[in-house]
Length: 92
Image 1 (cartoon, rainbow, N blue to C red):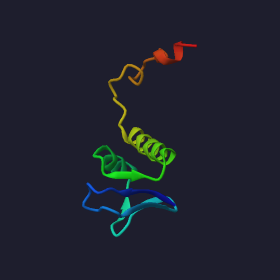
Image 2: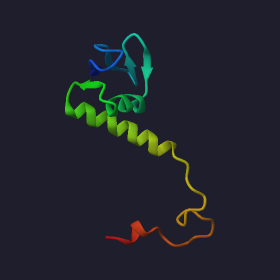
Image 3: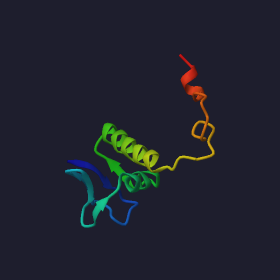
């Protein structure tokens, strides 16, 4: 499935990014992570197939980043013995 292609400001101009199975692949390069794709987007190097694909890849990159982020052991909501519910759970 086509996702995006590198635009004229990239050294890979015209090369496509596709989704093959569970991975993204940059033409003539190999596997590329959603985060690397979004970094290229941030630098203005990509032309997206459509806005929905752009949002989808951005969401995947964000979710992977959030999963990889370590939990702060000193955070009040995760500190040992803290029985208080996090503030977000107090709201209706």
